[in-house]
Image 1 (cartoon, rainbow, N blue to C red):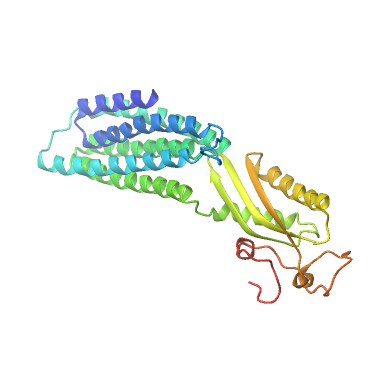
Image 2 (cartoon, rainbow, N blue to C red):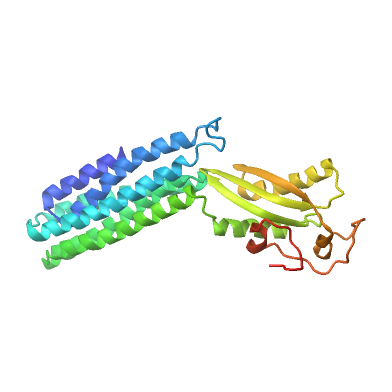
Length: 316
């Protein structure tokens, strides 16, 4: 509803002024209206519980929504360029800039407030759709501020050719931000590794690692909407019974949920230690040690992502 009101206000401002820069802002608002409805539907789909057809839930719908929104933003940027070229061919005189400025300034303020709310809710709920909408609204605000500055310059200097220059500059910003949203959404759809998340994950495990955790490898973290799916191989002393091994897994699970929240699904495969694990095993009370301890191997992105147990010989 807000997007519709803002769009209508910008269209009125354009009709009053005939400013191409204001039309640029209005065209982007069309995207806000469409993207708003798409985003709402994607949140509904993403919130549905998993079923037989979607065993990992419906969270990927948010990535699809963000990809569509980013594509629409890019399309709006291209349309702005097209309208600018047409304006060079058939120029319309600019009128009543002062009246148009008041309307555009009001839409910028409302956009910024709405964008801040979406970003806050998106970060709180770990929602890409809400975050993308918030960034889009705030980007719209910044472009509007740029347009306002240009309109003020034209109002006082009468340099009306500056109108087309503003439109081209804004179109570049719009296209770039649309590309960034598309890039992030495609990364989620393709399960691209989140390096910053993985680094935090590994750091927390290293800082809280007890002696029985010999190594952790084949680590994968995949995002499904607000849900993080984590699976890994976890090497423990081979002589632990099932109950003891399960206790270690519970410790690992509790640590991860404490740091990342309860919206996490973990699948942990346990591996028994091998004789070549002895030189790096920090467990001092091991009753079956076959080789003396040599040195501790820190867990890093390089050795936790590979699908092999850690060892000193041929160590990464």
